[in-house]
Image (cartoon, rainbow, N blue to C red; front, side):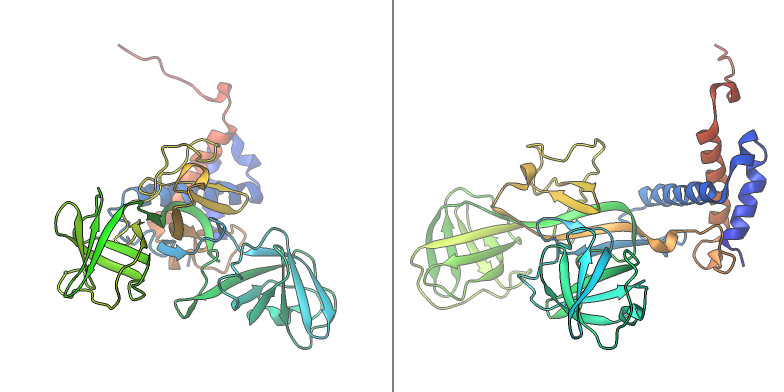
Length: 384
């Protein structure tokens, strides 16, 4: 068994080799240890091929985790509950420290759960699942029986999920998030092609103006006047520069058929970032938001600020022809956090012993770097 307290002991032994070792408090040790864990995981992650799992970081990261943006953003951590009011009977109004960004418009039934609530018997909420209704951008209401006393402000957190695809998913923010590794934006863009004609007989053919549709591509078709049955995703086969035939399957063996005669209109949309995921968004190095005109659906950028993740698929996300559908994230989980005062949690159940050794060494080097001064560093003369 190897605990956080054991790791701290090894770190103190390692840092005694320098004068700064005497100043390594528990709080400072926690900082350099967890910064080192993040660095080591990032180093391993960058060396992976297609984010394949390896023993050292598999329990510490989540890959291809799907979250559904609302207002073109995803929160990165659970909401902190600022205060709780009891306006009537068994109804409780939860006020959050920041906007909840929950899509109550699309999903009227939103499940919320709580953890960490303290004060009186407000711990009754912890671990339970509740149907929530929205009151404002920062408040929701839930019902519970038998709660008494006064809530301890800021003590609790909330996690939300909606019923996407008929199943409940914690899709508004990752409840176990610690550090972002990569993100991809799955989106859909309207292709403003001229629709010349539609032939709906044995096969369903669409004649278009200039286009760049590709055989085998999954395309979304909606709003074709007179053809109510054409509403959703279909595979296309190019029958020439201007004609595309629609199929129900990727192998193009089951032709799409429906009834009706085309009268006018039609919206054609292309997907970007669908599985297999085309690319991850590039990280932003500067502290400027990604509002450059170079941003495209196939080259998204992202920004993180104030607990919000925003993917940019157009300049300042102003392009109304682009609909953001999902953010696919790789991130380090809270499972990677180490408490150097904890003497009960066995780190070897999470990290192997060699990884623990690397943590100690990297943390020591970080501590020396933080505390180095010009007098502490000797630079050898370069011999030509």
